Length: 336
Image (cartoon, rainbow, N blue to C red; front, side):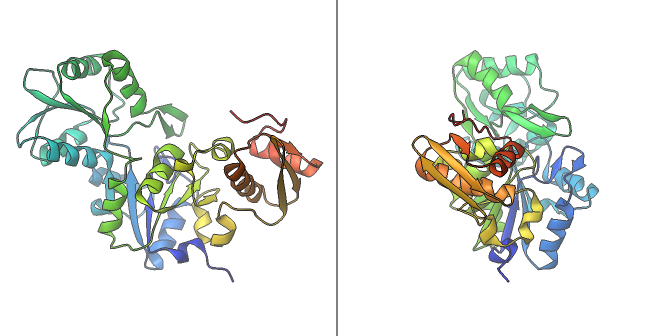
């Protein structure tokens, strides 16, 4: 029997929003998949770009969803931002916080002094997700940034997966300040590599696997960190975004959800799969065959990535039906 994906790695670095849960609602099968990893002795880490909660609160939330977790297994972008500022600023420097009290707490833990209003002594602005962020908070940050303060964003995810669908993420708020100031922040979290390296090091991992639902953060961060990755289709990524993914955002494996961890690694790899034939005909990929829809998606991604062609045409009725099931256009025009 072929080795399962989980047998090939010694640590598993999970994104949270869109991968393990949607807000207060667990994604079906996530708890069981993580429990199985622990039962086989694998190290589990939770690597999240959401800076709104402290590691202890994240662990509490996971336990409430029947997922074992401890604070030291959690790495957040708030910690990464505080670490970056602690390295760049002298002890006791004043940092204007646009975010939750948890983010302010990380700034304090880094030996810096958090404030909420702009002043002549503000050395930096740190910005993380907070559902309560409003115009007044952005106005204070705008004043400080225009005054020359260093600006660090915990992350720039434009959306946040929730049980109600995709809602504005920290990146949308960051975009507002970019427009207002003309400045660009340094980014502490994913897709930068430190979060992944820190999590893998804490697990003493020699072969970690990064798992997430976003190509521009989870998968791009894994690529930057030199790690293999599994993209799941429970959050932001779609078949269309996968087919058109740029090299820096291409996963090693593709699965429907975390149940993929128990499937054969070779069947999850983004590569031509049994049952499907995808051949290039000029500016179109012609699809024929019969089999699993995700096997077709993996095959399509492999050929599209290799050729740069994203227009798709079904070569038979079965292929057309599966392409429609995947939500992929089949008129031969390039996917935009």
